[in-house]
Image (cartoon, rainbow, N blue to C red; front, side):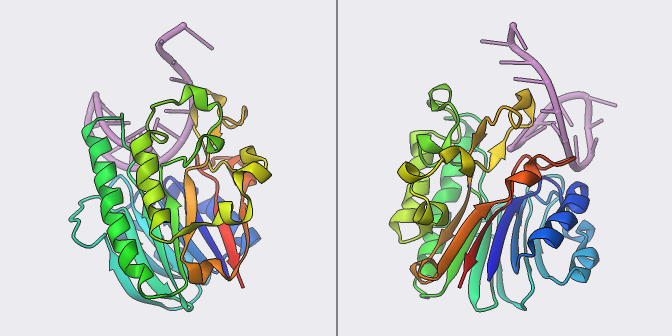
Length: 259
DNA sequence: ATGGTTGCCTCGCAA
């Protein structure tokens, strides 16, 4: 079973590239972030015709997450429990014998800002909810744009990023708390940072300053696995080539295969 | 050189 996650930065604009990517890489389950459209505007029929069932959680203009699956979708949960969030950033569902979640963590704006506090609060509630899901002892895959580069190995020229949003200590602590409750970073499970070329694992390159051409990237998209999922993890990868195509998202797709 | 790009949709904001 192949599970992929992609911050598409508008599903409507990205639909041609999305179609090309699905035809080429054929994921069984797709976790989308930044769909940037309300539910009634989501290209549901188009994607259903590609062979996917869909669960969508959108809003006007910003954010928006979705789960697409070749299997029936059951037990869909919108938003994090006990976190009444007007921003559409979380959805989970049970499908094809696994539970999956699509997460679009807040960017955080500037360290110390209101947006930054909201990001830390989002992480707190995410940790609480995932703690509950882990008690189910299922194969759980939590994928998305976490907007945190966990270590300096995940950052091009980390000395230029010291104290910035995406890499600050409090954000990294919030991300690490998800590992502390028992989730496993799929990339690091198979490619420890001291045994791989870390530049190969970037998932995001800013549209500005020719960041893609210069490979000024960060690893901020992640697939986190429960122990049950991790024990059947076979492979993981980044579809980096899709960042270099015509009219790309600023994020590349990330995927894993479970046996 | 304090820059640059993209998407949504307003004349700016978020990333």
